[in-house]
Image 1 (cartoon, helix red, strand yellow):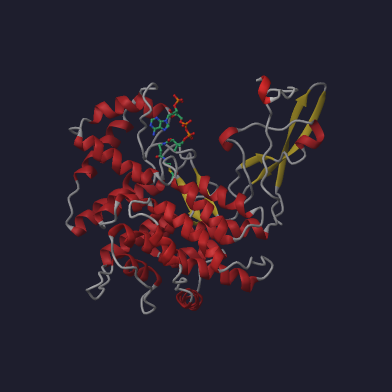
Image 2 (tube, helix red, strand yellow):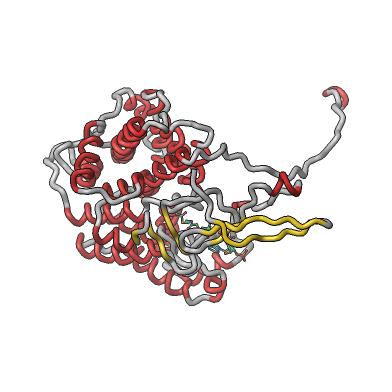
Length: 432
Ligand code: ACO
């Protein structure tokens, strides 16, 4: 269990009594009131829908500063990591807490490769879905089904068991992601190639044409690597909190991650990358009238929102969006692809960033605004975008799940204030 660093305290006056609660300090001086004893001492609870002001845990994994637009994994900035590291290296860093030596990374890769087969019966499950099924639904089901093939729960006290579960999931989820892609494309399901690096193997499993020898494409693989790293963790977001809360009931790693995939699917979270491209396409097909859509986004009577804009935590800029925007330009240029929606996206961003509505509310492009444009240039269908996000987020989910279990966190169980009817008397059905 972690130790709390205390600094100062906060006094709460309720009725004629005063109560004191300690303030907890993080390594970058962020502060929180520790209200562990609040209900026991005062009889009160706190209400915070959407957890806008509530911290659910202390964590050593990811730091983000929404005001300054900073994001780092285990102390390393994402700018540094996207420039210098591979996705597997970053996964190791997130999960085990330190950058691996060459030997450690090689062992990790070999161990993952050894587990890179899934039970053939999983194909039956995938086959039973219609081709039109959303890949995120298929991925969540297949990930959950992995539990049926490997039902043993993990003893979190055992480093060996944890390592084996980590390696298994890191090996198997990319296969399932690639299979959902190949199902959408109507291609035969593909297997891992142990002669390739972890990152090249992911690309191979997705893109290898059944009648051709696979040739790694540096541009594609670099773009994928960068995108996967940028999505690898983002502290206590909706899907990660889901993974932690499901895991807090001591549900297994695969079941917890499957729940995280479902949470990621929604358009207010990871599903936004699909929604952004659909929105940009709509604007293009509607004549490219950007101002009209800015007006719609500002109109409170209109349900339209500028997808890929705004973030619960970033109130200056999303550092991931900055890197992805640059990468989108480079990838399209390198691949010789011109995509009219990239120009629409840039004009939309420019206009929104000078509009009082967006400026006042501190709404900036988020990670999803430009990522879809890169996925599209790589030939990945729109419906698959959130699956790509899930693949990138996997090491983060694993790291967060493990940290939660290692810290022996209690089961997640929020309270509520009841506002329904009270003391009604049952009326028999014949008299209602
Ligand atoms: N377009 C128009 N207005 C917006 C947008 C948007 N994209 N985002 C927020 N606003 C407005 C709200 O209407 C609200 O206005 P008000 O103060 O006049 O009522 C204000 O900005 C604050 O917005 P909230 O919804 O309260 O902010 P919250 O932190 O709850 O939501 C969220 C954040 C969900 C990301 C929101 O900005 C949104 O819906 N964005 C579009 C979807 C999206 O891109 N999601 C991906 C996020 S990144 C990720 O999850 C990987």
